[in-house]
Length: 444
Image 1 (cartoon, rainbow, N blue to C red):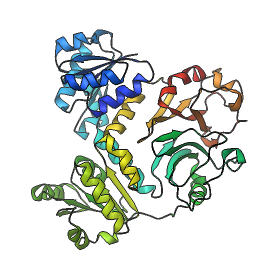
Image 2: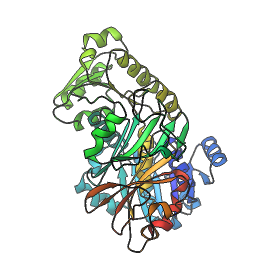
Image 3: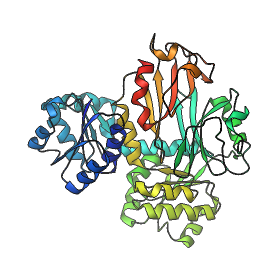
Image 4: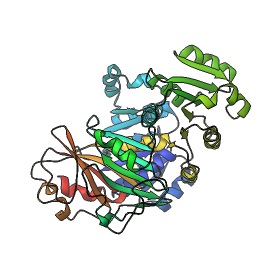
């Protein structure tokens, strides 16, 4: 697949990194030659120095041969214009990152399609959905549903009180149908567990399970169940606005914005949200605004350091659920060690969303996990495909691939070695980024 990515920022760079693992034909277009030089040194890709809206630069990218053109520059206008030009010059599909959620309304889809823009992505909306899911799933780090919740993926940081720690997988302890552990994140290492591996305190453990077994997973990981009703959001960013509009009605939101004029505008715009003008970094101010009565604290300013520090302060006040939006990807590993409840990076979420467009039609859902060099995919099994021709243990799956569960006739099932996968099953696969392409042979 020939793909051109316009924009060598963190979204474009991360997308290029994911796709380069699969030996796709990638070209990155950006005016910043220093960024391009760094990318080319790290990845097996082609680079073109130029503007996304330059016809000559697009021609240099061989746009007439391109299967997918992705515009993720900082400018919405540049992205949409570049997609229109690329489409007219022969690109088969185009995608533009935009800043206005109204563009994504169903009634506008045909209009943008007529211009030559196949898809639009609004990162702030994707991030707001992730935050809302995190506020509902209070004891989890990561959460993803498959087929309307028939199966779920949950990532949980386990402590020394968890029942599952220090038990080798070969011991038989994990051989049941309640869940399957598909991966373990330990500091900077991602482990696809084998028989000799075991869960250790402070690991982030990824489970595939069903909704009815979520409580069992919670008990095994020593987590406390609680509900979020009162939320404090720090920062009046676009993500904050989308989040305040998306959270369920039963959750009460107090939004703190430092800019007086902006806080007044937000107060007029957001119904059922209490907007307060003040500095969320001021501990005395937070006390006055009853931070100790909050169930969750969400830091969504444009400054990563401020968000990290604010969540650390919120933890000191006893708030159980903290969520930080961290723009700098390199800060994410450090943030994990500070025990922030959930970490969000809209660029990674956006790259994950776009990545799905490059995959085969039989992959219906995909997520790139935060700070983990791995993806979770939902694959629809075709009649006669290789994955149906033996038990899971005898399929000789590629290294670093773990089939965690499947959905058959709307019912979720965990997978073990003796499971036989059938045509039309929706199979949930956890694998390292460099193993995705190897799965094609099993699901075709």
